[in-house]
Amino acid sequence: MSDNCLVANDWICGEYLRTRQHDLLSAVGQHLVLTAESMLAGLVIAIPLTLIARQWRLSTGPILAVTTILYTVPSLAMFSLLLPFYGLSPSLVVTGLTLYSLTILVRNFLAGLRGVPEDVKEAARGMGYGPVRLLLEVEVPLALPAVFAGIRIATVSTVALVTVGAIVGYGGLGNLILSGLHSVFKAQVLTASVLCVLIAVVLDLLLLGLERLSTPWTWRRTGLLRLRAVRPGAGSGNGAGRGSGAGPETSEREAAAR
Amino acid sequence: MNYLTGAWTWLTTPANWSGSDGVWQRLVEHLEFTGVCLGLSLLIGLPVAVVLGHLGRGGALAINISNAGRAVPTLALMSVLILTPLGDTSDYWPVVISLTLFGIPPVLTNAYVGIREVDRDTVEAARGMGMTGRQVVFRVELPLAWPLLMTGVRTAAVQLVATATLAAMAGAGGLGRIITAGFDLQSTPQVVAGAVLVALLALLVEGAFALAERALDPMRPARGQPGTESSRRSGLLRRRSLTIGEDL
Image (cartoon, rainbow over all chains, first blue to last red; front, side):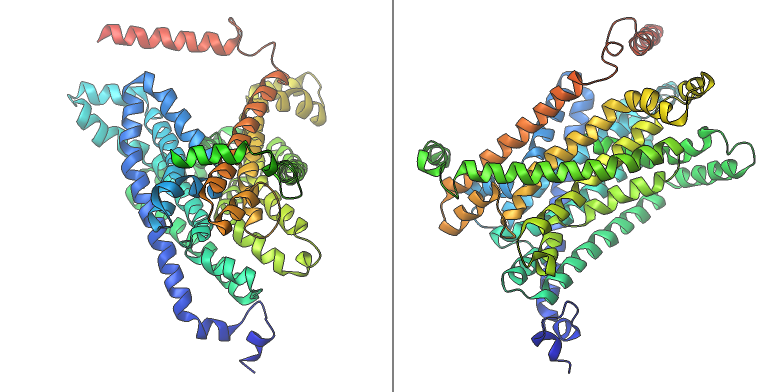
């Protein structure tokens, strides 16, 4: 009975989960490692790039243009173009995904820093803050919501794009999806696809939790706004609704504007 | 550099351009997928965004659709659909459906945000002039939301061109076939040539949509000219920040 679902090629098959547990776990592991490496490399490059773009006005245009052009290169093509330099290796996939994350990260980081009100910066300067202390203690904390929005979007799309790495044999769950497609193995394709979405959702929620923990003032304020919107009379104006939605909307807009 | 000259040689060989798996054939397939999917994404995404934006409801829905769209790997969706009865006859519908689902989020979210960001006073004024809801949408909200709306359409178009390459990994046609065939033949020049072709097409589409956005802008006479409200405002701001600098 339990063997039958493999023979019948069912979409959902407990027997598949049991017998191929090892394959699935190692694919998930590879998926997570590739995602983590790409995101870390992306952050390491995006942070200095953002600071350069902010510091020297002349460099802003070119930095945004180059990262945007990188984003228009299709993933399959990106891995192919990097092939001559890396050969068939995990670094090929990581490099490609890192280049993709740059667009989202730099744009959101820059938008976050630019969104810090000038008055706040003036006040900090008036209190004797130097540029470095101003950046670390005032601007970066206030930019955190936009920074996290960028990291979340980049992480979720990186998880999805890792699958394309299957073309060079390092696609994590993508390997199972592609081999399952070629051998018409339904349970494998569906299980790997669902796991892929699950990884994206779990990572997104983890990052959301981290964001909440590191920026307690934002959700306290959102709570207040929501209270105000509930009050009769205030609900008819669009101001309150817009206020509470401004965070995700603006960051989404930044991300979508690429 | 060896690979680049190899890719150039591949691209300049006429035999690679003709025939049933030549560049022209693949280009036509690619543009067909992309065009159909972009059209379907607009048909589904725009009305929903306009209605939600006009009513000022469902913002969370619009944003969440966009975020969820990023989490679903297109390759995975395509593969699953190909193995359903839908994929029994041809690869066409699985590819079109998964690409359309991929194209809707940027269209929907940008159009929604664009319409929501239209100045509420302007909308109120339009209503005060006796415009009906339909007139407000078509004469006020849509023209003012145009830049952001078109950004969404352009993003969707470029990403569709790029992502349609994946159809080849799932066995369907398009320019991606040149790349996957190159992998099978272990011919790096062909792989690089295919990648260059797709990247060029994506950049061309990006440029074409950027031009179309400007040329078709319903507010073109009003936008970007000296003396309009927005430019005057930024001039004011610039002057104010200058004085702040002088004070320091």
